[in-house]
Length: 285
Image (cartoon, rainbow, N blue to C red; front, side):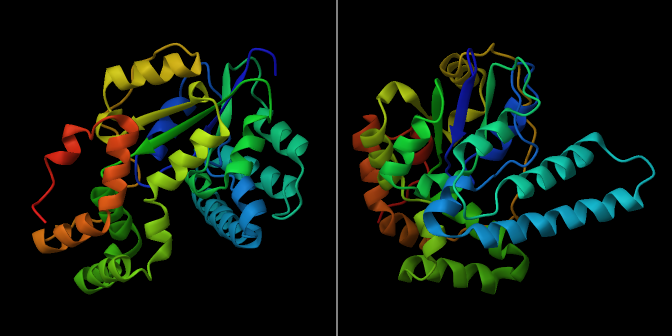
């Protein structure tokens, strides 16, 4: 691993991780698995490996169907199928083998300066797991993206419930407010993730960026410098995983903002201030 940096992008969901993965995956000094989210460490910690394997198997079945129907298969489809099958053969969903995991990520990396794993669910891992990840190889870096908590949750809700119409959206908002939509809430727990990262790692090992500022040359320059790679131009107008379009009524925004106030307060204290892009959207509560 001499000269290579291993990046873990640990979230948050709906905060630009897929866009950043695409940017780095096309970077001439990077080589990332075609399977963006490997779910290795969270499967081991949470016992969710069987579920993640099933999700990947179903995704690969869809790729096979598309390959069979197309006269000219796209290179990324064939690479996804190969990497997906290799990953299923590497990790059974429950047996820890860090050497096999690392070998899989290194595969075909050649002399790439940067390799790694983009799994936003890692943001929910425990401090001890972060510490183990940090010792995986010689040079490890963590990236954590944050988005205005209300906007992040609203995007997450539109992604999982948007096709069900307004009733489904309202039901998910109610679930967030009454605490039953636990998965959506957990992914907005910036306080937990940053406290655990801060306790497990030296500050110079993790980089924080705001979603609202990610799509700028300055943010990408900062990130590339942190990762030790050349700053290359990015396609800032590229949209990845667009959620269903829907307005968030002011009353519901106010309710979500009040419920997430501890997160706003923590980020302000941890970062020294809240980004203006967050405060401009706040309503009086």
